[in-house]
Image (cartoon, rainbow, N blue to C red; front, side, top):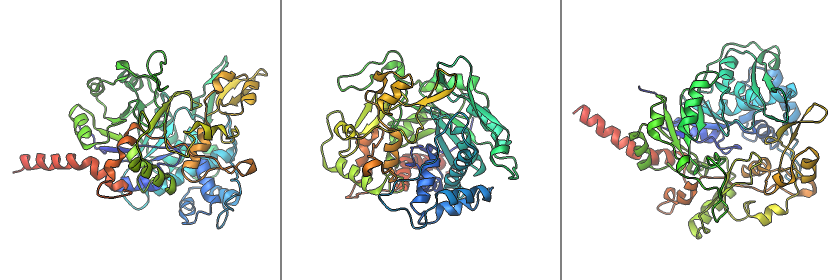
Length: 491
């Protein structure tokens, strides 16, 4: 069976590392550029408060189907010329089971802006990446992507069984719902999104239903999603424990090695033969970013590879320039710490999933630096819902102040080692919040184990490289093989 999908998928790295500039560059090469939808509403409002100096956000908002909503967002958040450097960002409200309409409208518009800009001016395909764990914004994000004509939706950090059906409904401008995990709840809890209500008086036409690729860690999970999802699954991203960001926990009891990292074994290895038997295209992710490995997995049935780390440190990524330069310089000139530049932290993420941190000096991968940060939860994307004693639903985060978490019924031991990824990842892309007392949030770079080999992109004295260089590097052998095949077939 033949599939006309790109061979290389650029990973959807949040928050705003996979921004529209990176995705657009990759898409223009004929591969799949992907934008991150994680915390996209906060990304838009901070860009507007920084003055939107190149006018890109406002240009995209002019194309938004509801100019009344777009103008309301500009009136609320846009600061001409940008806010003062030491002035805190104005925050949008945090999400709840029934989020305010204005927040849903902002989220729809923010995702629309990111996808629209990534698709502007070319005929390539663009994807949208979301996290299953960040459930409350997802329906609004999906709808914003659909309004902008997104071609692919990719989702990991959980089992996104309900997303295909939601895409079917949203593409017809119909109300969609998602189940929300609520600790202690006796009954099922759902969050909903109704395009007719959120978009108010906007005339809504049917929208293109994008391809849907869940991220899986096993062939068993892939088979389950293919069979039991609420709608059509079109392919899979198969992500191993060497990939950046959140990793699936090891199968079986959590055990740590002498460095404090989760131990993965044979049960965590994915059988490519079993994946191929599902008769859907799949891409391998996590330490596959070489032309040799691309050729190898394609020979074993994979359609291609998803690559994050090499793109994360390219010129076009959203990582702020000084942090990118510091990371590359450190890797090029210093000896790697024992165990390499990456630490798979079983505790840092409030999600409970292992999370990879780049061990770059000056970031909160250094425990002494993070220990000086006052705990605060003011973005709230990784909060967990729980049933309160009065029957209502509250939210808590194990990275928030310990006393607050315990008062909400959480266990103090669950807070140990947790880090505020929401604020740290915003700092990665140059939009760190200025907290009380003038303290600026500190970065926490995440990357896959491939960071140990990023120097292969910096040969011949180069200090930086482009996303186009990454695509050319990965497809070098593939293109030569294709030429060879054509020559053989057509002498």
